[in-house]
Image 1: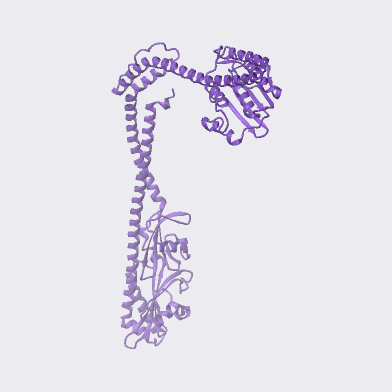
Image 2: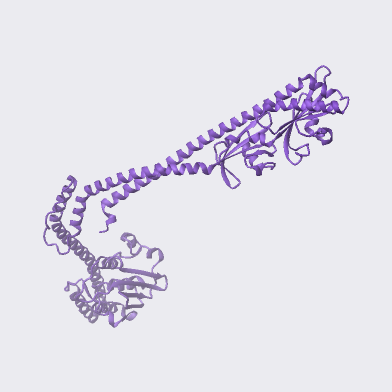
Length: 594
């Protein structure tokens, strides 16, 4: 008995599988929930960082507005931008004054890379640069954002990623903001304020927010990156990042540049830019993995301890049943002639009841098996006798009918020969109680039967026997060929003057005796052939057959030898019939068990 089939093994397998499923389910839920919570926390943290950064841009913008308002309200500055200097010395004095004045406003910023430029209608330029700038020579006044400011004095213009306007800054890029200095009395501008903002001003806003697992990017609505925690991205147009920032994907991992990120974005209405923060998704997974691993280990230890306890408990409960099973398995049922020793299972009440039931069952088993064997033998013998009793009267009736015909025809010598042949047949059938006889004796009975039929019909019917020498002594059911030959005579040939051949062949094929009964009669119609061996005997009789001969032979063979043996009938109308009989190879002195 294999251990895997024991009840304890099966219970333990079920428990282990249940524990594993529970463990996997719990781990999956914990991992999923922890990942979700971590993702939400990181998303909230990112949203807070982006909001803080957006507020920093707003503050920066308000500082720019404050400077512009202060400069537009200064009368000295207004006079310097309207009046033409008397000479060069006077212009330099004005330059020094305005430069010093503008430098004082730089203190509003915590960023040093902000430069203020004033340009008056007198074509004078004043800057916080350390060099003199002729603004009209830079061409910046012809840029679109300056043209919009000139056309609409109340509007502030912004230009992104513009080259510097001095010799020292022409290789760098800046964000320029501009507005008109408007005289409400004359209703005309008297100058322009132009502020150059270096990228470092933007990056300083998120400098303290940067971490190894996140990236900040400031970009226009065209995808132009103005500032980025990765300096290599500045000045690039990134449509993919623009689409990610514009979609509603906050808190949802997205693929970007062959990695997964959690994006959070915000719009800054003042600068008209988009602020994006990307958090590396692997950060979440690494945190989830490490923490989940701890939870999994703790859960696994708890489940392992519980499993060990269950193993001990299951084995203790099922051990009595295993003892009973082994006691039953070790009994030699073939040699057990008396009741074995009582089985003492012990343990639970159910096991004790099973042991007692086993003892009682074994006590009554022998008696039951003996009675059952006797009943089966008696039933089998009764069925065989019933089939034989159907065949014998049928055969005797047909034989006596033939002798009656001979007597009526005045053929007394043939009557004597027929009665003599009948006596030989009856001596070997009724007087012989054997169920099976050698094939050679069965063929002799068939020849005696043919003598009787030839007395009636003459030589119109012929019997040909071709029996292999090695098949003559094999045992066959007694009187099983005669009904088949009789069926061929009365149904295969014409009734008044039968004419034809009946050939019988017998040969050994592996472990089977094959006997073929072939006639060249008129054949069996296909619709009758389909039901000739069925249990509907009445249907066969209605179609011109007795329903006894062929079917009873088939039933006798199956009853004696089993369902693997019996008859197979093949017939073609106008050409004849072939009956193939399969029998086991049984020699005299041996028995066959179904």
